[in-house]
Length: 156
Image 1 (cartoon, rainbow, N blue to C red):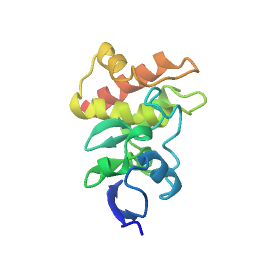
Image 2 (cartoon, helix red, strand yellow):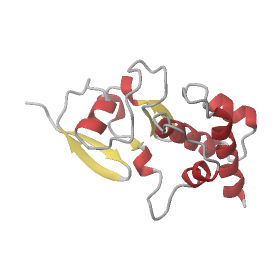
Image 3 (cartoon, rainbow, N blue to C red):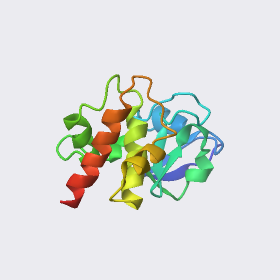
């Protein structure tokens, strides 16, 4: 019998029955129904599965469940709501920063981690923070503009 594992996800306490070595991504998508976090490569190489763990962007595909226990986990669903989108979500819409959208959840999470630790990033700061997030659509410049816009608007 597997003992329930307690997680704090998007501000809510959750309990799951899973192997402690299971990937956080698998539990988020399969048991908690949080499918905004995407499976990309499964090897911490693309950023599609990034979530915030205690405010840092982390690849959930290779994070074992035990490593997230007792920590504050935020998925893309926890960034904002349809009624009150996160400033990054608004900026991405305004800058038309998405194309296919597969990479955007991970990019939004990485950008949120950046803005949390550096509310006034430079272009180079944004590019460095998003370096581990792959976008095959070529929307990089619009994505950088959107992150800089969200930072600027948050300061005003």
